[in-house]
Length: 334
Image 1 (cartoon, rainbow, N blue to C red):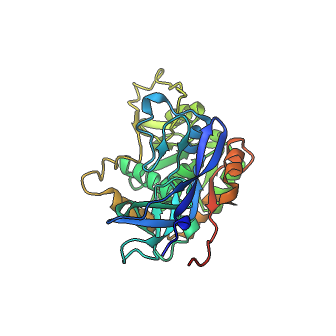
Image 2: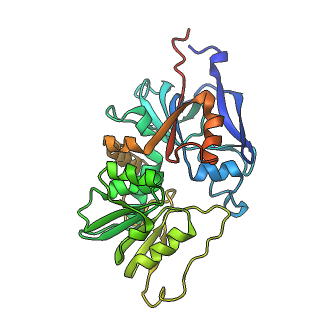
């Protein structure tokens, strides 16, 4: 049985632009239909979490951009995050001792409804499982714009979302697949996973679908330019408070190009009426059985070092894919 002190928790809060701190809080015991989870790993998203860290969440979409278990309000102070892997310590018998994924912020222990948890298969390592979030986003993009056999596809942007998407696309019988990024490190990573990775200048034209995830105006403009007539660009970037220039002049209308917004909170239209969020996450866990995804985790830090790791990511001092955060093993408790 947990002592009152052991029901305390520690969480990371962003408190000002470029600043964060740990805060302690008392956890209540789990009730009926709830579970107490002890964290094993969490993951830091280089995209959305850095916008939150800089205070760049636009007020107009602050409500929509809330994480499921966020505390506080944008811009600050806010407890934010959504890539957590842990083990159930209290709850229903069928979950006790099971590893689970949850869309929870960076916190060492937490209580959540059991329907917020996805059980992790035995053959998916805990560290790899933090990638369930970006892989779910990538899967949803494929449902928003499903590729066909022989399609010529490009992914612009080799971050967590773009690289996850390229891995999933590599399983399709495509005519061509290119991942585009300006960073040679990301290109080398993609090539190590068996994916053709090129500089922007080498992106081939006449693409059927381009998935854009670079969060840059240049990437968006190039994506539209390299589409074939009546081609589709799927926009996965979230620009925060920045309003990008979109080249809708010249031949955009004459070529009947399409731009589709993709966002993971709503199931892609191709499967919206036949899949649930839980079913989508179960499929993600099946995808994560492939060890190729390990390449998307660019480093690891201890939970105690999380403030420095987030600052290092924001300042470009650490590799810019997923940063795994390892939580300490508390050892036996009386």
